[in-house]
Amino acid sequence: MLRFLVLTSLAALVLADLGPQPRYIEDSLERVVGGEVASPNSWPWQISLQYRSGSNYYHTCGGTLIKRGWVMTAAHCVDRPMTYRVVLGEHDLYKNGGTEQIIAVSKVHIHPGWNSNSVAAGYDIALLRLSTEASLNSYVQLGSLPPSGQLLPHNNLCYITGWGRTSTGGSLSAQLKQAYLPLVDHNNCSRSDWWGSTVKNTMVCGGGGADSGCNGDSGGPLNCLVNGKYYVHGVTSFVSSWGCNYPKKPTVFTRVSAYIEWMDSVSINAQSQYRQSYLIYLTQRSTFIYVS
Image (cartoon, rainbow, N blue to C red; front, top):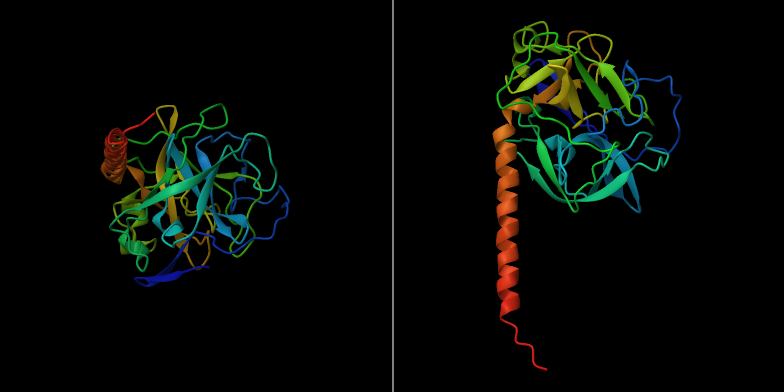
């Protein structure tokens, strides 16, 4: 189901894809609205977020493995009560490559500032606690996050990755795609003939030409090269409802560096709650008397 949100004089479209999709293999020449098929497992922190409908699971969003037991995604991907799982080490959604790890989501942490009726307000970020920790190998790795508050320069080299629709209104991609989206800094992206006041300084833009994100890419990473290493600088959030790659309406991402402190607090609090629960469990066990 697509949700259209009126933002100033423009309409923005969040990029989750929550409609059951036909299970078929697409022509590999189709692209993540431009771009190309990624080499298998070349972005090993990319995950497929899937929801259950009936007895099947369907891809709805992307995400980033940031700790062995934690995934970062967009708030709008998980702000409805559903059963979710993540697939790590994935390349082709419809083929088992032998590299996949499938792990249930045990808890969803949505940023408290998120308002599903106003994507323009920002805070489109969530953390998913996994039921078990991922096993790291050459196919599954942790994404690197930027330092808190970091801003990258205009035209910094970045790539979007995902299984999203290959054209506006088109079909999901079977294989993971990547597209070069040079970063558009806030001064340029907030110009009146671009996104204007819709884009906040807690967001970051990428592209603005023929290549873009599209439905199904939401929550996935914007991978930016800094000092020879890729960092996940953005979480895919929205595009213009006039078209995924509408001119001067680049893909908009949640700026990860604006939320490092919040993410740290979530994981620290979760760890503290786990320890308290474990201590209560040990205390309760100690009250039992075993009689032989």
